[in-house]
Length: 82
Image (cartoon, rainbow, N blue to C red; front, side, top):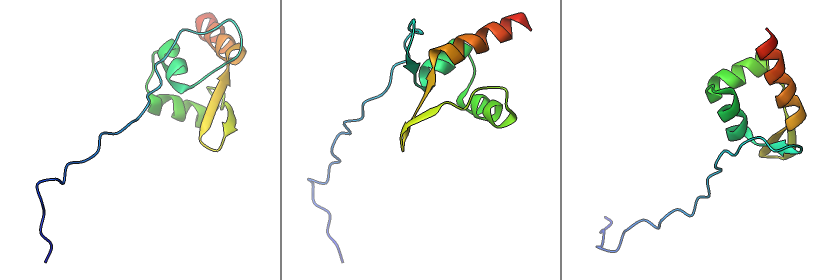
């Protein structure tokens, strides 16, 4: 039988979140910035990638995917032009 003591408080998480920023002139951006620019949800974006509507991006590491700003700007111009 285990006995719980009064000092069983959880440690606070030191989680750093990524805050979306406006598109830079050049370089790459992460998913929150892409979603903020397009104004769609994460699920809609991933479904669009599967359908071939949106670019898949590139992996920087095993858990970090980025999108070149040039691809996002091209996507935005294609959306505006129809």
